[in-house]
Image (cartoon, rainbow, N blue to C red; front, top):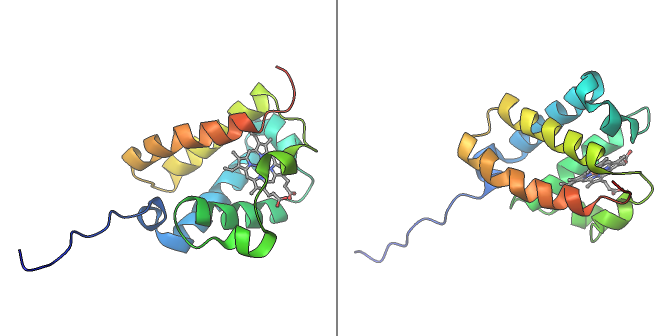
Length: 134
Ligand code: HEM
């Protein structure tokens, strides 16, 4: 050995393609949600425009995936559960959100092993957001 250190493992943010990759993922996610009836319930929790949701999810995922913490810089601690309380989120909305994200990950070419590692983490976050039974 010549004193070189092993390279740090790439973050999910880097593997997704940095800011442009996160942006593409979020755009695809909300484009799908907007047009595919399979996501009608989760779409209905949003207002007419998805612009603010697109921007905020992009900023949030940047930090969540190991990149720059844009959401925290702009809005402070996410308090995601509290911020979702105005929207009725049950199992149907949770599962549609997750299915839409799974599709967006595939459509934007996120490597399979990374998508499979991210989905349980998305599940935990989405499940935590449920605020009505069932
Ligand atoms: C479980 C089903 C979910 C539903 C139905 C849902 C719905 C919504 C809605 C309606 C908004 C408001 C959008 C706007 O500003 O117009 C929102 C905001 C947001 N959502 Fe979700 N969401 C879900 C899950 C998630 C998950 C899993 C994440 C993160 C991985 C997430 C991250 C965010 C963020 C960061 C915001 C912006 C919060 C703010 O600053 O007000 N959401 N969501």
